[in-house]
Image 1 (tube, rainbow, N blue to C red):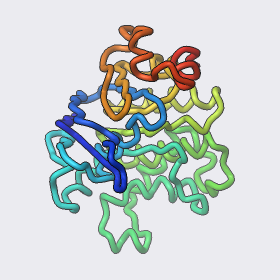
Image 2 (cartoon, one colour; image 1 turned 30 degrees about the horizontal axis):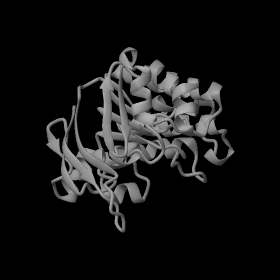
Image 3 (tube, rainbow, N blue to C red; image 1 turned 120 degrees about the vertical axis):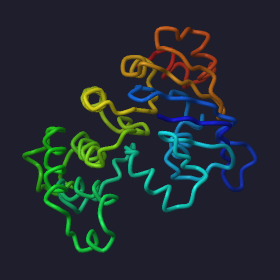
Length: 257
């Protein structure tokens, strides 16, 4: 589903690559968790996969379509098949839950129709079904500014689900939530992806949490992949290789969650 070859990205005014020569294959329906300290390249890698930022070199193929080396319109068509969930929810606070989720259907509609809010009955039905799936049916017409953090992330998941994607990328989706909500959101996200055969790639901080929810773990350090294997094969040495003997190692690796 995702094939990455010799991927590099360097931000402007920096000398070091944020991701360095990444080669990675992710199969359809896999549940992959990326771990590493802040600044290790996790978010940059996810954004390069979705072409939210342009890679400096290399290629990213989504279902055999090269998203990194095509014109923008083609990239937008490919991106319609990739859902993205963010740490800070990235929803419209002044809009209702329903309209936020309906926005997930934008890529399936004519530009002018969506400007005037003319979505089809099918779009409305899909949005309502997705809202019910994440347990927010009773909040459908509530403004999202009135919701809790956990509920806002459920709105974000429902919006992505309404895209009917084959891939979901989740960039630290539970970092702003308390432990109970972290588990609820990760359970929901994992179960939805298993039900629908969606490929899920999530970046997480807490190691024990990552081991629980990922069937495969990618460890990153200084922009490079330093571990790629099943969670049960992760050793203490691997953890130090990923985090280093730093504050992050004690907080996320050694202590875990």
